[in-house]
Image (cartoon, rainbow, N blue to C red; front, side, top):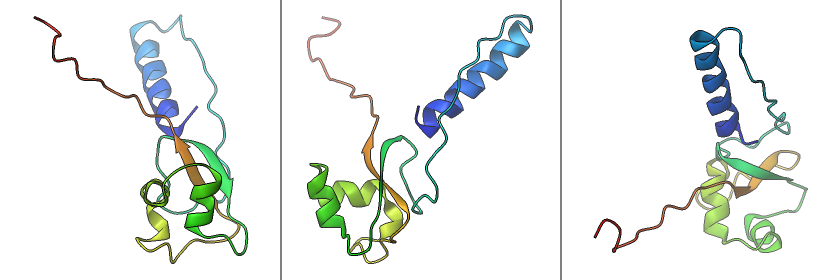
Amino acid sequence: MTPLECIMVLLAMAHAAVASPRRIETKECTALPQPLHPGVAIDCNTYYRVRPGDNCNGIAQEYGIATMQFIIWNLGVGARCTTLQPGFYACVSVVRKVIGFNPYAGH
């Protein structure tokens, strides 16, 4: 579960506890790897531990993503990837819901 999903579950549980205190469904949130690189995307679902000598291009290539996408998911690395820190976890995949556009919907 991503941090964003955990927050949503916790909010839903709090709402359920107020609405019906006797019936509460619990779910566990997975602990995030530590230390996280600053600026990691809140909806990250896959992390990579940065090793000495790594660079944004190499990590992005290893995970099949664009370097710019890696930088967007890890804003703390800087626009030119000058602050990538070995030993920290960086985001290499996120959970995003794709909203499609159907021009024929509702006609």
